[in-house]
Length: 311
Ligand SMILES: Nc1ncnc2c1ncn2[C@@H]1O[C@H](COP(=O)(O)OP(=O)(O)OP(=O)(O)O)[C@@H](O)[C@H]1O
Image 1: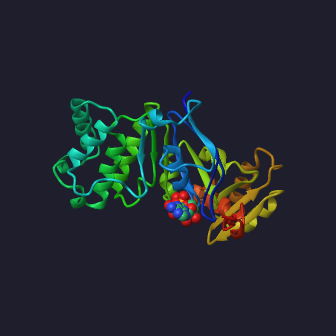
Image 2: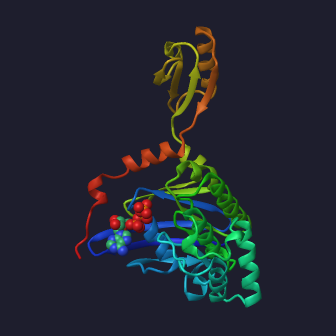
């Protein structure tokens, strides 16, 4: 299987250490969400991955080969600072970019037509980029990343500032690309969207990857919890090992540790029903937002994040 492999990247900007041993893989056909606080190192990693910035140490390989000029031409990249020519017309710009990547004139034209249509900006082909709304500029920016039919997609915050319809369009395009075997790496602060869309997620903190995996994998904890909407929380005390995590009106969250028996959920439900009517009984799983908060607040101290290296 094809894999974009980012391995042990180190990068400092003067005295600021932006990346430290940044390591992860993105497989062909998967959508990988790259999340982390402002300044955690996502854009720096992506810039190095696509070759617009060099690392101080570490490697980026595609299918086991270092990413060189030839491979770079096969990457579709949406930079954070965007990169369209504001005074150029949408169609001219996309055809130009496709030709730069080696498509002949007819293929470049066809690709421009295809992507402006797919992304809903075909009416804007004759407009200068600067006259478009920000959301439409972003759609054109995605078209620019796709117009040469790339084998790898690296997108820096492609969803920021998009309306819900544009988010759906963009999500659909990323899914289609992944379905065709393209590895899709994108950064975002919209964690619910990342949770919905991604096969795997990487949480970065202070220049390093601190958690990586499928959402379900990341959710694996030793503790299991249930939400019970019904009788007062005292019912939980009759089940051995059960602990009330929170109680808000008629809603109680009850957790058990790793040694609880498999049928502890049935015991809890029986105990709740014995105490009164139960309107809801559901397993509670942490959301990506909760996992993120947990990882980002417990993995390192702010002092480590701000650690500087001597110039
Ligand atoms: N050109 C630069 N010169 C100096 N420092 C930089 C430069 N680019 C990034 N940095 C610093 O490197 C660190 C990582 O920044 P980076 O932009 O990679 O983070 P990010 O995770 O993409 O953040 P955000 O979510 O805010 O976009 C930050 O401390 C940032 O201030």
